[in-house]
Length: 352
Image (cartoon, rainbow, N blue to C red; front, side, top):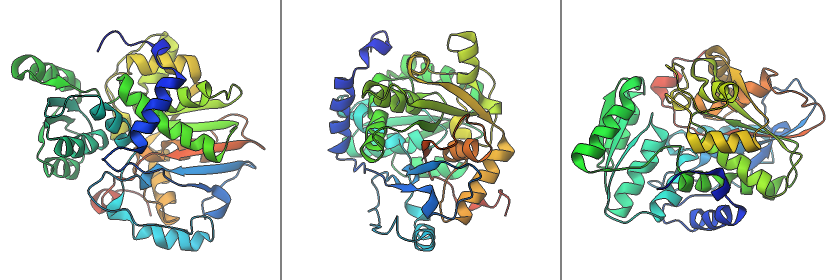
């Protein structure tokens, strides 16, 4: 791919990607949005919040249960979702669907991921008959490595600081093609499909809150919303304090890296993406930070309300309930729960 530029990310490009994602053989679904007031979730701010349940996305290998009662009773929502633990996925399949649709079948690809992108990458590799390898940080849950390997994809676990070195070795020595897990135009355009789904339910949101790691989801959602004409919508990214690469990039006015550490491993890549940074600078109001204790508490609160959401997927929720987002009173707000890949072994580490 040539030089990445925010100017190349147009509304026509995003609309084309939306159709690719919608018709993908990988089985991406339009995930539901529910009013916060129809859940048992606590809220100490008077505003109208919709929750985008991307934790209910699927990664193809299992058939999604159909729920028809999202907006009836919170107790029904809770009991329904508790039976859903083993079927959860994340937003990553959106970008992967668009990436693989625009790559030759049967290729030999390598990527780096803490788990969610790797899972979608592995599923797509199996579907398209491609060979693949996922380079993972040692801090990622071992259960995710095992799941990725179950699709026939190789996994190599290395220190976070060594991720790109290992990827480069695979490209140079093994002639693999690198598919980036967040700094890729096709990927970002695929993620933008979520932004377009949000606008179908809430055509003119005042505020949209999105988790941010490398910035691919935040950039895609922000571009979709702003390019669709929602000039007044404020879009905020949320990062962990121990992995605030985009926050620091906004301060430095260029993409920067850092030694990242957070319970939200999916939001802790070693550097912010170049194209995501450029798009975020253009379309995002600001980046706010949450600490690991706030993220852990968010996971527990969501789980008690019947929503199985991993730490990375809980960041936007944590920011809202901890009053990190300015001027929400009386506003129409969208909170994205971006993923639900958390096992019982991991949940045991969170407060009751």
